[in-house]
Length: 245
Image (cartoon, rainbow, N blue to C red; front, side, top):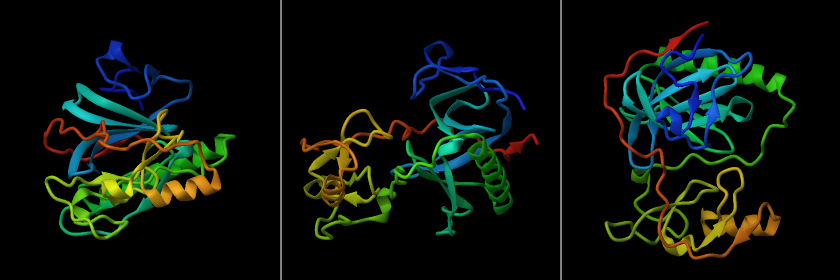
């Protein structure tokens, strides 16, 4: 495998906005296992994202120009990643699985069942091999996949507040639930996700505070942070995934 269309470094010099700064993609014994476009569940809808599977990391981002330019690139170390297959839900959410890690967790969907099986097989093989080589313990604090906005018409905590164009949905960064502002008045420092305190629902704040899971700050949580990955990108036709081993 090789880097193909992916720049060898994520950072300003490559023309790519990297979430983690200038991370070098070329590394000893790093091999590109496969690549392809998957539909990623963002907060409002499914959006196409380019994925590159290496033997030790998973890289994904927004497609600007197919096979030429990508934006909002993210890197997930495979020794921190877990994979869970999803049941089909409706015509749009089929052939999916969850990618779960301390930094980010989300659902993705392949074009068909055979592509889903191929992705999962290669992901699990790379993850198992990477975890065998790594001396790190498997993380226990994992970022939750966000529940899509259209999955909840009312606050999932109080079940009273109905969301409208004026009354906005908010996501708890610790459990992923959709909540109203009244049920998410606190912020919590989740060090695997952010260097700043992030919005959490009140039950998660109370549980984390009682267990002293992480430092907390009872700051005002007005205003929802947008997911940097929630941009549209190119709508080019999806091609089959390609694996090189």
